[in-house]
Amino acid sequence: MGEAIVITSGKGGVGKTTTTVNIGTALALTGKSVALVDTDIGLRNLDVVMGLENRIIYDLVDVVEQQCKLSQALIRDKRFDCLVLLPAAQTKDKAAIDPSDMEEIVEELKRDYDYVLIDCPAGIEQGFKNAVAGADQSIVVSTPEVSAVRDADRIVGLLEQEDMDPPRLVVNRIRNHMMQNGDMLDVDEVVSTLAIELLGAVVDDDSVIKAANDGQPIAMDPDSKASIAYRNIARRINGESVPLMNFDDDKGVLKKVKKFFGIRA
Amino acid sequence: MTEKETRPPRVTIKGTRDGLTFILDDQCSYNELLTELHEKLSEEQYRLDHGPLVHVKLFLGKRYLDDQQIADLKEQISERKNIVIDDIRSDVITVEEAENRRKDSRVTRLAKIVRSGQVIEIRGDLLLLGDVNPGGTVRATGNIFILGALRGIAQAGISGDDRSIICAATMQPSQLRIADILRRAPEKGEKVEEERFEDLECAYVNGQFEMVLDQLQRVAKLRPELNDEWNVRTVDM
Ligand SMILES: Nc1ncnc2c1ncn2[C@@H]1O[C@H](COP(=O)(O)OP(=O)(O)OP(=O)(O)O)[C@@H](O)[C@H]1O
Ligand SMILES: [Mg+2]
Image 1 (cartoon, protein in one colour):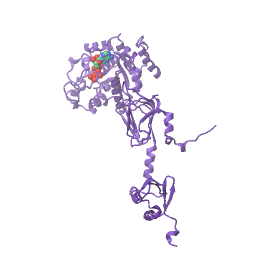
Image 2 (cartoon, each protein chain N blue to C red):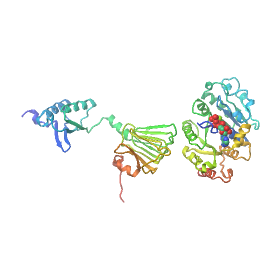
Image 3 (cartoon, rainbow over the protein chains, first blue to last red):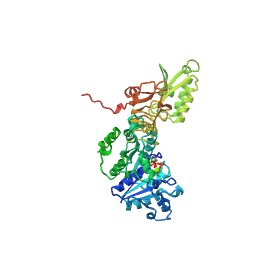
Image 4 (cartoon, chains in turn brown, orange):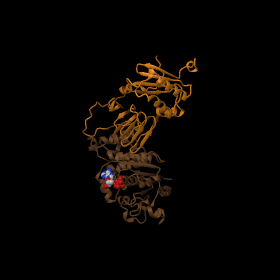
């Protein structure tokens, strides 16, 4: 029986979809079987970032409405046999699914996959409730900005009321020079405000955007810092304790990140 | 001798520096009491229609009066135009009132982070073992003590008690409120006149009905009622 992890943020555009795709890819790289579920009905884009949009025939709503079987709607990744995607519906009504539908689908996926990663839409509305319904664990993504942290805090409060493990944090799009100048919150401040376990920090990197546009997840790149960050997050999800030693060479900010792991260990 | 003269008086009036104290018998019936009060007030020496305002305190002993009875009593006495009733005191309260007082003075301990969008409301005092994050709110009818960082909103004395205080280990609130007195954090560029410590600070309402922040040690002195002395044993070695 696999584990279902929902990736949330509250605020839009902070990198939920990017995080879902790259953790999924990085987990697949370690040989785990992974199903990605896009619950952002009406605004689907997990398929685009993975370069799979042309292969979509059925979607999540079709499965709920029993237009097809779950297995028929799953799209196999180009790179990994063990990685599949259940796309969101582009055009259908959001009200078409409710939390109990999601629970059923996620339960079924957990039987066949080691990890089920659920990409949550922004906000705290119905879409959030659906995405959270079947999850056993949660990841909260935030950028080091005051407004993103505020929304992440709201989400953490809601997740703490759910019957699942305490949420874990990914700080995305960190920029070393801004943090060092104090123009941006540093990872330290984000972690101390949210007071949840830090799963990893990902630098802001143009290659992430380029990779998304190419439909080729950055986690495939063996050299980029962002990719290494995602791979390390995947290993931590797998239960490995990964120090941030080889994560970066010089940056002070990342030394701070290291400190957090040092404390927990 | 008539019967009236042999039994002890039901209303004893004593003059004090601050005015008059009425000590009312707590064994006779309420009607007897009112009758005698009326008689007393008609006596020449207590005809207080003219002259300076007289302040009066009433002691009811072990008699319980409900709201209606207290209103009647007040009316009876203030028929005499120049009397002000300062205080009505009784040695007894109902079980319900006792229970309410207990609830109002109880300390509720809470180990939690109050996150953005969350509102925690407490009857009595709040002892929070955690932070109030920006966008989070804690409310209490009594005092608020935070053993963490206060970065959101704290409202103490929400049913009107302006002697309530708010303390936090780290005091960086977005808004403070005690009874109906409000204070918000200075915005960027705004100057704060008073000295700020931010660590272990305490907010209270001063005599001018302004909210002031000061060091915990000093505020604690201004609020002696915070002491539960009856429960403290000091051991001198
Ligand atoms: N670490 C990063 N470095 C640079 N760009 C990034 C990074 N992470 C995400 N982005 C870019 O930010 C944009 C938003 O990312 P993404 O779509 O993953 O956010 P989201 O939280 O899923 O948004 P939505 O709320 O709309 O679903 C994308 O253009 C993405 O390529
Ligand atoms: Mg998205």
